Every structure is written in structure tokens, then in C-alpha cells.
Length: 252
Image (tube, rainbow, N blue to C red; front, side, top):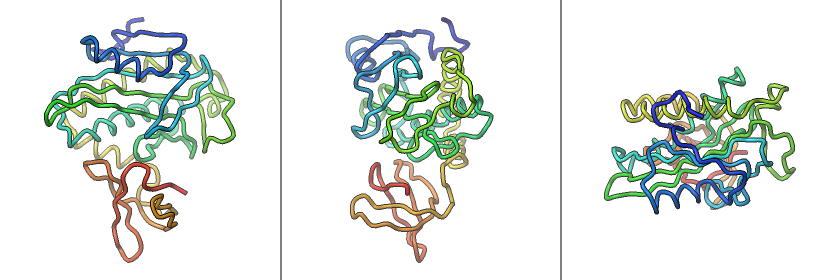
């Protein structure tokens, strides 16, 4: 199928089952020179991955499981979190369109709708010197999933919110469009991406409880921003600001 985009989705390699679309895309990048926007997708993953070794659950044929190959060679390595921001916004744009309700990005790049997690993102970058060479953007988006394991924290799917089954191709089509639009926006005006990310950040500037996963300490604070490197800035008691990296803080 030819999508209404300049490059994202012009090449789609779809499989019934793979271990991981990201793993397959990384192999593609290592062995060949795929065109930018090439997509590896699957109906089912036997070893789908999330951030820092976590897994991604999805029933066969119910959801979107795909990886997009980008070549952001204009993006400095120190700014690579801005690509994560752009991708998260694209996924949130897509969910918001179908749900007719604003989806939010839970730091660093999960996408939530009404306190339910609908999508996860895993980006694996390769560098050349001080710049990115290629990026494999893995996305798991729950479309028609209705049977989640009880152990999963706050899972959700579009079908649950809309009360009807969606056409996965239609959702994928819009996702490709929004990914391309946000990617080009990042290239042209990264300040807009950073501003939009904060505007759509889950629990931004709200008082909530968190846990420092390193010490186990539970505390109350306000998310006040995100550093260029991706660290989350939380203002704690007595106006002290603490910065957390991936998996260093839990939302309670």
C-alpha cells in the first residue's frame, strides 16, 4: 500500500510473526542501506521489547507493532532525546485523532489516554562522531487489544475507549503521516517540538507522589521540565530540584 507521505512507509516489510521488529530493522541497517522511512511491521512479536529491557505485550493481529528506520544525520548526539520527543508527539497526535481526546506523553515516551497506557516507544540510535547516523524507532500501539495480563500497570487500547474495533491500516496510515510531520518539524524547528512536548507532558506542573527507585524514598513533587539530555526535572520540597534519568523515578 502506498501511503500519502514523502518517505515514511514508502517501503513496508510486513511479517506475520517476528522476534522483534526493532531487531529486524537493526539487522537491515547493519547489512544494507535501507531508504529512510522504511518500515518493518508484524502481526505478532515473540520477544517485543520496551525501555531498558522491559517487555511489550500484544496479542496477534490486534495492534500496531512496527519499527521505522530514520537517518537523522543532522541531529547532534547530545540532542537525541529530541527525536524521542518528536516520535512520542506523533503517536500522541495519532491517538488523539481517533479518540477525540487529548493523549499525553508520560516521560520519557509512553503515551497515555485517561491514565491508561496505549503506546510504548523504543528508539535505538547509532552514532558517527558527534551526530546520529541512523535511528530505529520501535512503536507498539494498542489498537484492538482487549485482553491484557493482570500484571500490566494501567494498560489501555483505542477499542476500549471507542467501543468499536478499528481498522489497523487506517491507524497505521495516520501514524506514518504524523511521524513524518513531527520528524520534519524537528529538523526545521526543534524548539517547537520541545515546547509541544511540555504542553502534552503527563502530570506536568501538577503535585503528585513519586518514588526514587534508587533509594526507595517516596516523595511529593512537581514536574517542572525535561533537560536536553532527557533527564526529568522534579521540584521537591523547599524548592529543591532533582534530576532523574530513565528508571530512576517511578510515578505513583
